[in-house]
Length: 323
Image (cartoon, rainbow, N blue to C red; front, top):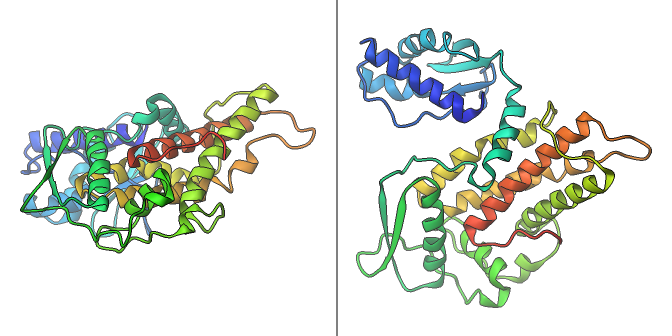
């Protein structure tokens, strides 16, 4: 069961509780599931009971217990534990390894991984000043909002509703990709740095790390082909990488909802920093023969590459095959 499928399962549990009269709330459009936090357990957790407690007029733990009764009956759910003020911690069973399901989902959806209908039918009007940074952010927001089923329109004129701190100087000398990154990565209220640091080919440069991580993934995929093996999702121990990959849909939704491409940019740095130490484990070493473990690692690395390429594209930045 993938995170998207589990989210729908939780949503169905809410619907059933409402239909049975146990909860009197408006059914939310979507439910977010994440890795369990401190004190949690199981494979995934959700705070939906805390969100519904106030409109339901009941304590969050009572809402959680109501939803638990429906969730434990769902196919693919082995157990549900209520922790803290009302978090639902869900253990999966009778299904593929969640990590395997995640990698398969990314491979199946490709660049569309993380896209949803969270903003379906919504039209976002962005009124921006004639200024380079405002234009760059608005351009990225148009693409990001579209991933969530919405539509963004850019206008110029008062009253302005998107006015980031302007760039201190013309970013064009940095080149298209570095200029775009320099304008988008800082939060809108932060002053962007238009410096040659964005061009440095070293790990100290976040843009370099993101683009280099993608290029490295593409390189190992080519080398795997030369060694005669292809990617095949399978069990793999790489929690530090799996967590940000699973979190990608939430990040995209947040970036679209808050008109904040900087959130996506910072997320790509997190993915890159997780995949770079993992890449050296993908290919066989010495006389070692390709195994199921190598195929599983390659599949996970390629999934990370898909997320990096898709995110860079949304920011208007090239994802190089070689670097």
